[in-house]
Image (cartoon, rainbow over all chains, first blue to last red; front, side):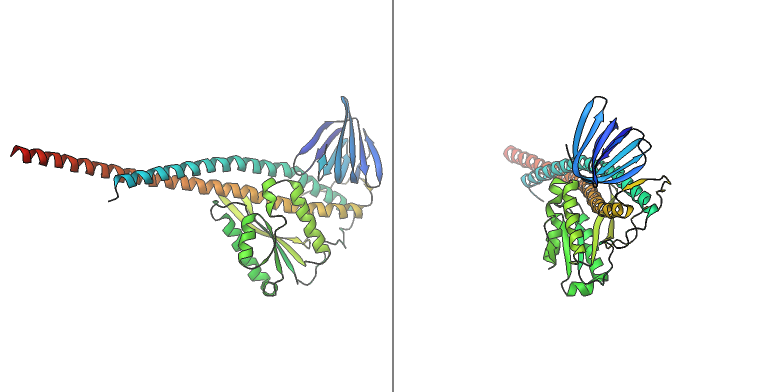
Amino acid sequence: MTLEIITPDRKVFSGEATAVTFPGSEGQFQVLNDHAPLVSTLARGPVTIQTASGQQTFTVDGGVVEVLRNKVLVLAEAVVS
Amino acid sequence: MASLKEVRNRITSVNSTQQITKAMKMVAAAKLRRAQDNIIQMRPYARKLSEMLSTVAAGAELAGDSPYNQVRSVERVLLIVVTSDRGLCGAFNTNVVKAAMTRINEAYSDQARRGQVEILAIGKKGAEAFARRGFKVNTTFVETFTKLSFNTVRAAAEEVMTAFAKGQFDVVEIVYNEFKNVATQIIRAEQMLPIVSAPVDPTVKASNVNYIFEPSEEEIIAELIPKTLKIQLYKAVLESNASEHGARMTAMDKATENAGDLLRELKLVYNRTRQAAITKEILEIVGGAEALAN
């Protein structure tokens, strides 16, 4: 699936990912390939991305995530990597 | 006629002024490009945000009791005026300040007379102008442009939003320059709070996919609305920033051109004076030689 993390200032991440873990406002959750359509708000916390080449973590300061047809989009107001 | 030395000094000074204006124009052009990049960076975020909002709103009532759409009788007014930190950009700042004054006089003259119009100045020039006019000026975010990023604007937006939610202000408006092109700025005055209409863009089609919403749709909307407000302010600040550099570029281009005209005229005067001096000298020599010959 493709993942994009964007903030108003820049595009933080854009690329393929195999699994992504989010700090949902109702608790942590993971999105894998072919996940059902989802919209969720995020709390402050780490977003962990599993890619073919390894693992990457960004800390988002709240935001929203949308999952639709293997496209994951994260809108965060601020990201500290 | 001015002496040769005076004209020469004048030419040197105009020349160096021209160099400065030319350099300033080039700097403004570079900064303008960066400012436009910032706007382009912000666009996908803003678009996705409004898409998401319409997706979520399609299935739910738009937050009916959000703290940000409470319409109250207008007692206290906050005007966010976005200007620049520096001058030398033509009528850029004057225009915003004038537009803000017109807005106050037209819509909020009663509140202004009671001293209940407050100005939140973003940019030093606006802060100075309104302080001179005797308004209460909040200068917490004056320095926004020294290090322009979403974070600073976000802090400003959050402060305004809490103040509105607490009832410190009954209406919040933003006055800024919108960037149309390098030579043209359009003055905008838009209401930020209370939210006028649903911030859903009708051109964005909501998809009819069955989403899982977590937590509920209402809570997501409540989360999204402040974000759109912050983006609204951020957009105004970015537009104003691009406009400022555009205005400065045009002003400096004009100044360079004027300096060029002035230089041409001065050179003409200089050459004429020089020739007159030479002629005079020759006449004197010839006169002297003739006096000797006789």
